Amino acid sequence: MFEKLDRTVALVTGASSGIGRASALRLAKAGASVGLVARRAGRLEALATEIREAGGAALAIAADITSAQEAAGVVARTVSELGGLDTLVNAAGLMLNGPSIESPLDEWDRMVAINLCGLMYVTKAALPHLVEAAAGSPRRVADVVNISSVAGRFAASQVAIYSATKFAVTAATEAWRQEFAKRSVRFSVIEPGATATELFEQKAGQWEGFTSMFGEVEQMHPEDIAEAVAFIVTNPRRVAINEIVVRPTDQA
Amino acid sequence: MIMSIDGKVALITGASSGIGAATALKLAAAGVKVTIAARRADRLEALKTEIVEKGGEALALEMDVTDMASVEHGVKRLIETYGSIDILFNNAGIMPVSEIDQFKTGEWNAMVDINIKGVLNTTAAVLPQMIEQHSGHVFNTSSIAGRKVFGPGFAVYSATKFAVTAFSEGLRMEVGRKHNIRVTCIQPGGVTTELPEQTTDPDKRRQLDAYRSQVRFLDSSDIADAVVFAAQAPAHVNVAELFILPIEQA
Ligand SMILES: NC(=O)c1ccc[n+]([C@@H]2O[C@H](COP(=O)([O-])OP(=O)(O)OC[C@H]3O[C@@H](n4cnc5c(N)ncnc54)[C@H](OP(=O)(O)O)[C@@H]3O)[C@@H](O)[C@H]2O)c1
Image (cartoon, rainbow over all chains, first blue to last red):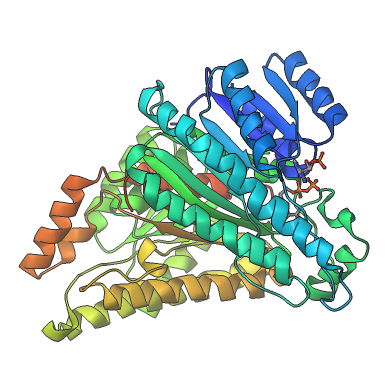
């Protein structure tokens, strides 16, 4: 049934925190060597050490993937130092919600830069390697798992640009899925609801905005989302899990 | 994190073949007491024997989901037997494909009765118990056809599956927080089951068979794995939608 990821290489963006970090740990536990990407080098080194001490293999790659050049470099280093690329998890992201007149334009630009462009740059550089892995690796399959959001399915007041970036991710994933289906690169999108990470802390008042919409909810943990990532990647080759919406039971 | 579902009680409709039967086997293997419901009693008995031989626990119920009295009778027996119900898998469904200008209205109505009303009937019969328990998990089988309308022949089937997706989402919003009941909408693509056999239009049947020979369809047990995955999530996590296709299906 579920496969081991031994001798596969995964690249996880946003690995310094939250969902990316938990996904990297989970894939390492399943046997993958993991490239860890984010800007905060110290955190990545600490995670790499944690993974190695648990018997896994990891490579910390500090980079700002809003630069196409750095994103391409991240993929190149992963392939040259870990020996290929079978799995890409795009989890780096930023949420800065608020009233549109008061919010600085810069906040919107920053969300587009990481949530959409960052994902786009890493994926673009990764595609040839993923196609190669799907054609030549023992598992004969490769995976891209994109972390969108329930905000990628439903738009809400004061969430305009975050939602726009996440709708874009959902749409791009579906288009790529269709384009690469016959080449055995599986594209999946996970749309999580509220998860206890640093995401809400990037701007004051965001959690209050959320609870005024949904009430207090028991949030999910990053590990809950990582479990969905692992479920997708370890499914047998023939099974493509294209989309998982996962939300706190309390979150209407 | 994965939670054990050992000892839980499930009701699976459409359990006499395909996805329902495979899910009954997987849930039983995980320690769930499975109530397997369908119209074909002989098939259910055979499945029950298989489950019991493998060390599982099963109750076979001859039940027609289009008949509210039959559903209520079955659910009553389930609760008398096991005292609770944790998982409802609304899986019974049919897909007779034909174009609208054939006016196979009998088939349209049968799809509405089984695919939509069957889900409503069973949900109505089971929910009071889940509400009383303040816990439960409802799975509804929609389809890729509940997300997009394929070409000619699928209009009514798609309409019923869009309905299942919409009902799942509305149900989730109402019972998640208030009653601590999770709702998962499973949306499979091509799965090797008996589903194409209900198509009476010979051209459409040929097309369905031809497609199946082009794309390696999923096994029913692949969908069963997805159900088990969602059922094993911790109580605060609701896998609300799960879209699952054969790797080659565009
Ligand atoms: N938490 C939720 O409720 C929730 C719900 C739905 C969707 N999501 C999505 O889940 C994903 C992960 O978010 P999270 O909740 O885990 O938030 P988080 O704890 O704030 O993590 C965000 C990660 O993105 C990285 N990142 C941001 N900008 C970057 C850049 N320019 N270059 C490289 N890495 C960058 C951060 O690392 P550095 O700062 O070290 O660079 C960090 O590792 C995001 O796409 C988010 O939109 C989250």
